[in-house]
Figure 1: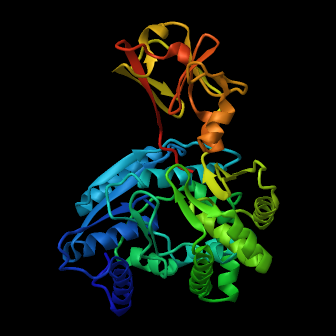
Figure 2: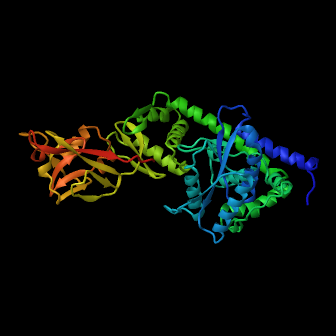
Length: 461
């Protein structure tokens, strides 16, 4: 049995403890406890993180818990979850086991899909921070991967120690400046047990290839290389911040917030900047996309986007697909929005609320307003998207008008026009939500009707 920690052991324990305390901020007198969830895989690094936090939590007012994401990808997955439960119980730390659904989209690798599922699960935690066990060697591997992808300063900045998310808890990486060797030493001193994920040995995965085939040789030739590359990442993070600050200066007065379209970039401002300094125009566009939480485009992709957005004719319809979103031009502004919903046709049979792929169409009882109840039979009413060529007569004694023109005059953005649900009775367009009711279907005075309201679902890009 290992005796009392010697001076070297004490140094290891102190280094890990200090890293954890520094990451959360020393706040034993805080008015309320900081809620921290450990992302617990059961591997050595996350067990070390759990152990270190469990030791400092009482004196630093940390409300500590853990989450294990069960992917079900390994035959050992159930055993890992049971192991995590045992380790948390030893330390009196509550554990939540989340069974993640892995969805692979658009050529996404299994590893990337599992990672996305893991972060989506962690984002649901009711906490201030999610603590991740990434260390300096992980950071060095990330820098190498980003270099091989030709990344710029934001990519080479790799993983930040702390980062706010668009929703859910912030991410916290207390071990980011600590090398793997220090985590190994800590696990030895504390006599920790952990599990090994067999997939970490698969060198077909690029990160594993770098770890097993490249990093070991780099460590032989350049002792301490992980901390050196981690330091370079910190320098790149500062550079990235300066680049963003320049973009914010260039964006001053060029960003307009619209109730429907959100933050939009004035196209004239981008063109003017492009005439003076094309590199700054590209930087502004890159920053604008990042502000909408889109992944950074490649150099070639960014150049193509920039060219189309700057050179397009004023009345041209620009539709660029990137990172699950569309980038286009609306009323002289560059916008980012969700893709239009694919064609749909759903029958209405008298429901008060009709569920559609992208929201809910509400039929609220009314008197003297809306569409006549008697005009919409329980059978034969279809709700569908525009197909083109639709016409509607909104005013008695006036000719019908092309719906396309009506929506244009209403300044409705193109992507909303394409997915706007229309109510048809047979082949006749009866109701356009937010626009009006055809005269043939309008409710007579004193009669019962429906107020048709479109309630689009919140959709993130």
